[in-house]
Image (cartoon, rainbow, N blue to C red; front, side):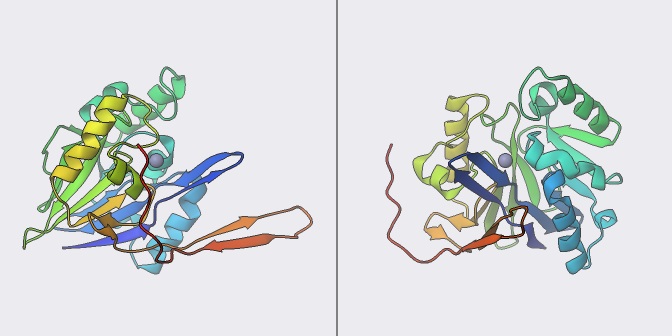
Length: 244
Ligand SMILES: [Zn+2]
């Protein structure tokens, strides 16, 4: 059993809004489980990352959607043969970006035409992986808990714990559904004392800090081809300052 981060999760704040890409993680267990899929804007990159690892989308047995926010689920149609796993309440009340929009129901109907299975807390996903109910960011958000043969715990926390900052503060900056539940879900993940957390929009970490550090390059494209490239690297720095 091993875990491959197919795409790193990232989140960027700018003076004109935020942007983000959800991490996509592959668990090679008795079945092959993909946790989250990313969105249209990352699809070509996702395909390239699969190809680079000599994995075909057809090889994926199970796709877990941590929740229905668009940045995590819109590439699900790349996996028409896979079982799709979703939290029970997410199918009932989840939404792509905003509740009450017709596209939410259209997307759910498309999911229902796939091999969709809704799950509750503790449901088994593969030999080593189970679902952990972590609502708040969205109505029925689930995380994936992977227990290794030596007992080591890895949590793929989606946007229940989107980044290390949320883990430290014990609440996420952004909660689209229920702030109190969001805070409780962060604590629920922390109480497991995971050896590794692979979050939705950040590099992997544990209680001691980052375990891996992803680099990101931003390219500002101008029509006259005077492009500017900025590469951001994590470097060791002071301890984060936490304000409550
Ligand atoms: Zn997200």
